[in-house]
Length: 508
Image (cartoon, rainbow, N blue to C red; front, side):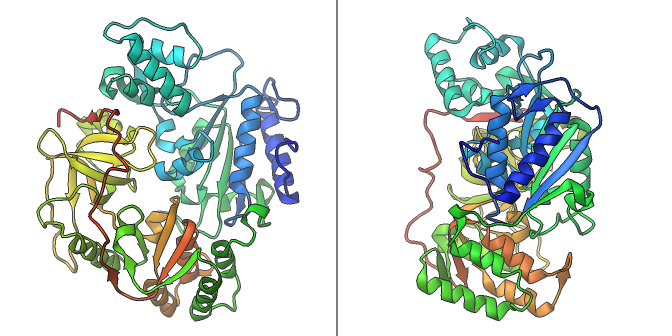
C-alpha cells in the first residue's frame, strides 16, 4: 500500500484497497507491482468523494505513482506512443485545463477530458522525434532540424513530458507536426477523473465508452453542473461503489480556510453567523482577510468570484476603468474567459485545433496583444502545458441591462471570449488561485432568497466553492468598492521570449 512513502488515514487506506481491487480486475496488481491478464471484461465505475482537505488529491497522486511503478503506460493526451501487446494504460483527467494544471503542479500528469476524447494525428517524420523523446526509438535525423534544436526538444521533454511543448521548443508549430484530430476509436484501460462534480451526463457516458475501469474523484459539497438535472454523476452510483473520505489530514489541519469551509456543514450556522466566523479568523490568521474593497491588481490574475451576472459585469467595467482601458480595444494583460468556439461544422478540424490548445469553454486566458492578422489575438492560456497561442478571436465586453455586448475587435469566426476580471462561482469550479477574492454581498443576497440546491442552502454551496478556490489567502470582500491599482497591467510574468507562438486557424 505504499505505506513506506506516506501514511494513510483509515478511510484513505480503505479507499486504496477498494480501488486496488477494481484495478486487479483490469489486470494491474498494485500489491506486487505486476501487470496481469484482466480478470474480467466487465466495466467498473467507482467514486472516491470527500470535502476539501480530506485527502482525495493525495490518494490520487499515490495511486498514480503505484500504477507507474507497476509499468502502466500513462497517456498524456498529446501522444500515445507505440501500442504493445499486453500493455495497460492510464489517463488522469480533469474537466478543464486549470483543474488539470492543479494536478500537474503536484507532479501528476493530468490532461483534459477533451484531449483524451480527441487524439492528434502526427506527421510520420515528426513522429520519429516523439518516439525518441519517449525512449521508444533512436535519435532521428530530420531535414531542417539541427542538433541544437533536437537538444532543446529533449531538454523541454525532460521538464514537461509534453511532446508538443518539446517540438515547440525546437522551433516547430503545431501545424508542422499535427496533421489533424480524430475522435478516439481505441479504448484505454483505466481512467482517473478529478473534479468529477463538474461532469455532466454526456461526458460521463463518453468516458464509460473509453475506460473499462473508471475512478471518479469529487467533492459532494460543490455545485452541480449547470446543465445537469440537479445532481452529480457519482450520486447515481450504488452506495457500495462510493468511498467517502471524511478526515481532514495533518497537512491541512489548522488551515483557517478549510475550517471555514467545513463550518458551513453546521445547519445552525446562518450567513451572518458565518461572516462573524470569517471576521474572527481574520483577527488571528493572515490567511483570512475581511476586505473592505475589491483589489483591482489581483483581478488581473485571480478573478473576483461573484454569484450574480449583474455584479460580475459591474466589477468588470470598474476594473477596466481603474486601469484606464480604452473602450475600443483591450490592454495587454487583461484577463479573458473563453466562451466557446464560433465556427460552422465544415471547420470541425479548426475547432479541434483551438480546443486542443486549451481554448475550451471556461478556459482562463490573458490577452498579450494583437496577432499578425486582423482579428487575431496573442494569448496566454492559463494552466495549459503549451500556453502561448495566436488565434482568431471574438471578444465581447458585456454591458449592464439589456444592452448588446460591446465588441472591441473580432475575427469573422474563431474563439469567443468574455472579460475575466470577475467570474461566477459556478465557472470557478475546478480552478484554484493563490489568493481569492469573494464578493460577500452576493452571498448574502443568496442567503436572503432562501434557495435550496441539492438539499443544501444555495448560499452555503456558493460560499463553500468560492472559499475553497483559495490556496493561500481568502479575501472576504464585504463592501461594494474597488481599490485603485498600484500599477499598470503587466504581461512580463507570462511571456517567454524563447517560446514561439503557435498560430491556430490561420485560414480563418
